[in-house]
Image 1 (cartoon, one colour):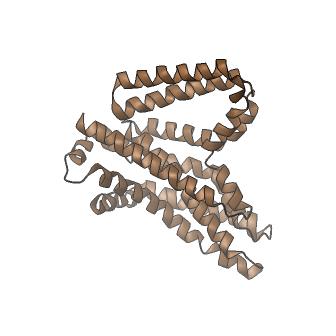
Image 2 (cartoon, rainbow, N blue to C red):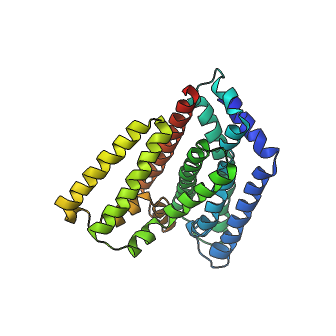
Image 3 (cartoon, rainbow, N blue to C red):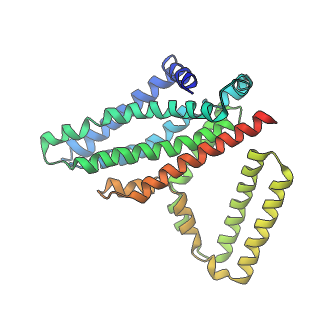
Length: 287
């Protein structure tokens, strides 16, 4: 795992990608720190991180698009699959490398709360809790990008799909609020979601029979629920879409509330998508 980690870190710092990510991200945080904290005389560093969030989602595809897609395209993935290293160690080595890039930025931002203390009282606990939450939120997004990169050979496709998934997660709650709350709408959208899960099952297992069987049974069960007890689906879109909204959990930290559930949520997202990536690669390795 350490060898893979070193290789990936060397790749970032021998290409322009790593420097662009670090430079652009640090410049954004510095700009928002000045605007939201120094110029506005606010001691809450969470405001600066909250302002950076929308720009950050543009950076996630940049650092995750090549992590697995490049190996798939150049067929060097076959060398990895036949190496003595386990798939788990390979994926963790790659994932920890992109987390390290992100972690460098977040470590540098740790100097901002002490700077703010020169201009007034600063809640250090909440400031560093915000930094931790932002790091975990970014780790969740990067785990998603890692998985998407593992199922394609095209870096451009990986970047586009990662951006689409991330932007949908950011605006999931707002999208749900714009949709009708009827049971019919929920049934239609959940049907599409189940088809997406069936596709994901096929990606992981490469078993068309299992995927189709899952899709058919799930759709039948959903339709039965819609016909027998439609009240259970009314208003459910907001709850379900809200669960997928990764960025919403950070808002609590930005406004000074330490949310333990959000920390668990982010870690669970990271574990889930790293696990899915490992399973997808294992299936490809033995197919």
